[in-house]
Image 1 (spheres, helix red, strand yellow):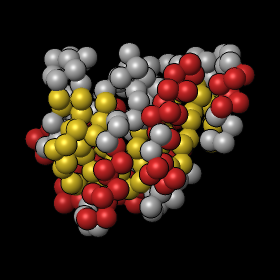
Image 2 (tube, rainbow, N blue to C red; image 1 turned 90 degrees about the horizontal axis):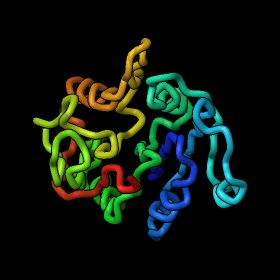
Image 3 (cartoon, rainbow, N blue to C red; image 1 turned 135 degrees about the vertical axis):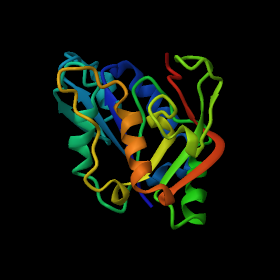
Image 4 (cartoon, rainbow, N blue to C red; image 1 turned 120 degrees about the vertical axis):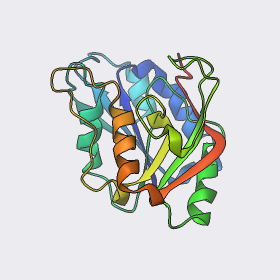
Length: 202
């Protein structure tokens, strides 16, 4: 089992905290961390940060205005093996302390290829929720956040995050998950336990 964690980055100062949250567990040996530095916004990175990250895969790619790094994620998806699991962990968020419970879920539910778990929001977004619940009814724009989803690459196929087309694509994650659920509802597993943070570094 390999979990590919993708971090699109415009705030490199947060990477040391994210790294600590990912690799503080003995389960972290299954993680391949890929960091996309958006060079349209990041011009200088502290050498000490780069030194600490030398063993991880770093990509220096230029993002597009109003894109929120989604086309950069699309580009990276093409490099990931079909049998790997993918988790998107943004640069304003830490891995939840119970995240590695997903390993047991994968083992116990081999027929599932998309795992959606509940998220600790703490009223930090427009919903004013404390907990964003994992359930089929929330698989829509505004109901689910990308940090709630662990997905097997083979389940994605040719589906990709929506391009900006000159407009903000802030909701591209909700659109992506909604489309995926409409295609393969039987591949989804809903975990009620909170295994995800929302903007924990903000």
